[in-house]
Image (cartoon, rainbow, N blue to C red; front, side, top):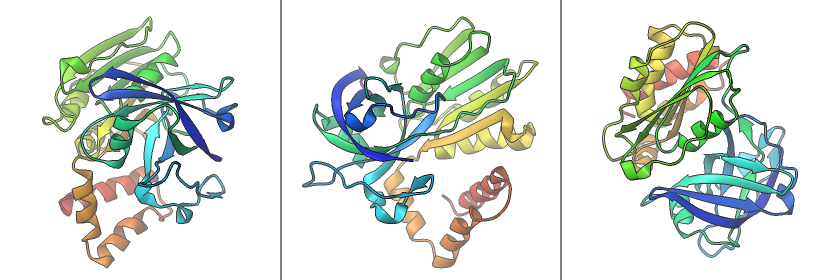
Length: 290
């Protein structure tokens, strides 16, 4: 794990809601990408009056979160890495409100952020024959990178939920790719991700279902994959990339009594199957109206 400053080298609008920002800098030369399509980093943003954010320390294979202000940190997936040239690309969803979106809307060449080295999330089983990738606009960059890095023989079904036809972006070429665009979700309408995942066929052979989108919208999809279909954790990944009305959600979480918050946070310290912990955690949040 390393943490470093990175400078904005290029800003390109891919759609009315998706802005590509390419970063460079001496510390990015040899950037150690995992080579996995969905790999995430912590991005640290400057606050008012700063030209660059202070960098946190490192604790083993992770950041020392006690040395960083969590209010300045957000999680993003890498869209592309050119380690030889020291370039790292991140696609930002731009919208009103929120620290990261506000920074991305105003980003200009020369601006500086902090980021760490990435950790992978996409983890298909050996001998993969087919995959289903479902994402809203926040998960779209990772989904497209997964397609780019997928072996030619793997049959891939890609379903992308966007709020408007104008939000479409080019999809990478792949010899066995089938792409479907769906209108909905993304904070503008109810999400169809649960319905999409439940309605998709499951071919024979070794497969993998990867779903990324709004946290609450994914709960039903994950419940279907894990509990109703009974799939092992090696056969799916359901990732909450963002939370609708996140500021309000954080306020409501902070307003929970100390015992309830300790109970929720303590779940992740248990020596149990992480997916079983996630089951209990999501059920508890749902019961609390979160």
